[in-house]
Each structure stands twice: as C-alpha cells, then as structure tokens.
Length: 94
Image (cartoon, rainbow, N blue to C red; front, top):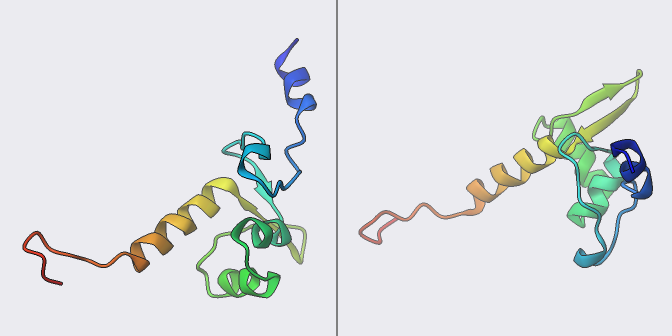
C-alpha cells in the first residue's frame, strides 16, 4: 500500500466528538471557520471575531472564503494559553 492509498483510507475531514475517534491530524491540514468552531467548542461568530481582530490567521481562498491551517490554530491556542496563565515569579509573588 502506497502513501496515497494510506491517506485515502482516512477521513481527515471528519470532526469526531470523542478524542479516541479523532484521526491523526496533519500539520498542513486546513479547516473552515465552522470546523474550527466545532473543534474549539465556540460559535461560528466567535471564530469570525477572532479572524476579524487578527487573533487567528487565515489563508484566503477566493474573494470571501478562507481556511485556517492546523499550525495557525495551534499557534492561536498556544497564545491564548499564555494570556490565561498567570505570571508567577520564583518567590511566589505576581
């Protein structure tokens, strides 16, 4: 079985609800705003707001459409974690 055959066996477009059902995600995988909303468990409006505010990078597809790469989504998540994690110094003070 070649690489192409192995890729065709997996449905990378499926958004699974349980972690053990999720397919292995590729670094170059692309998502729609709706798929990102499902993954992040937020509304489509929230994802669009993140995009409009420049918080979530997109790749334009045509005049009005765009996609969000797995790498850009991971970068967004990492940045949000930094913003939400309190900065505690070594002596325990803020």
